[in-house]
Length: 375
Image (tube, rainbow, N blue to C red; front, top):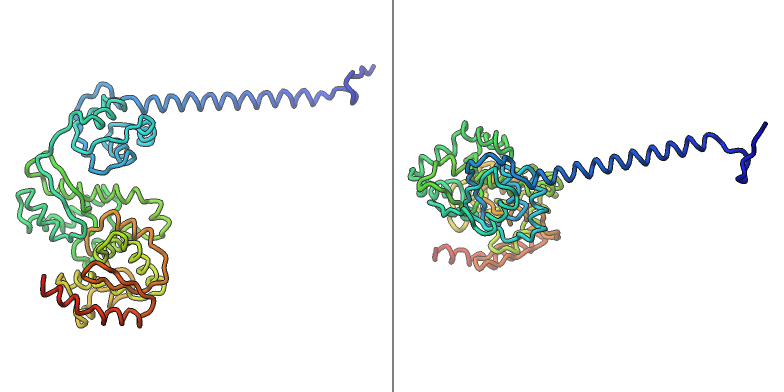
């Protein structure tokens, strides 16, 4: 006998019960997954904020460079094995409004939790004054860097240069810092580490630090800076080596900060048109002659560094580019300019045609001759 359902629509379908049961199971599973994710997330964050090893009181020396962001500090601490997550550190430090973390050399321990690390960096605890401190200016080339390093390590400039150019040592650095391109080993490259020794202030605990340790620290700084721009590098479709090379040219050409992205834009325009870049600093570097003015006959100097003779970028960097020049190399200012002319007073004049550029050169050319006589 058929028993009718009191609900309008006829007999109750047994499939409806199954669908309700399946929906309940799915909802339960979703709840379980969310709960598990919440527990995992809570546990992960809790562990990330705790000490890496509460039983390890061994001191680890950490150098926080001047101007380091919370993100950079987090990466340094993670690299040193003092925290497990730079991302958690960054978010937590910002939530604690710990924006005034101090630069300097610190002795920190794996037994310290994130709150203790932040307190140490914020209040200057366990801060140590360096025994040796020196600055590499932007635009320095390898021989100039070597001279500064020599003065602060007790070595001769020749000894420092020998270490900087040692293929085995550069290979060791490359194994640690992938920013170093294989192109540095080209026999036509003057100095393999040109462009990789970041211009900045460096501090050391020793009165006469080891030369290799000094060089390593400089390359490490370049790696960190370039890592911060990895997304932009990928977008540019240029290799890091190419970015550093272009940045080094911008560093040498620009006399004022506002001109860096503009000059970069001119170089990009010329590269797109497959024009030679015609950069005077590349001729000076090629000839290893850094006098103020470049003569017309010198523009024909045969060298893969000479951008008057060969199209595209030079074979490698021609100086140590700073971060602003690296940013300019990655973010050129769009324009219709294909030429620029720098005057001794710092003004840069941009033009669209060779005819316009020639007029500017003829008008201001004598200024450089007068400037050269005063130098």
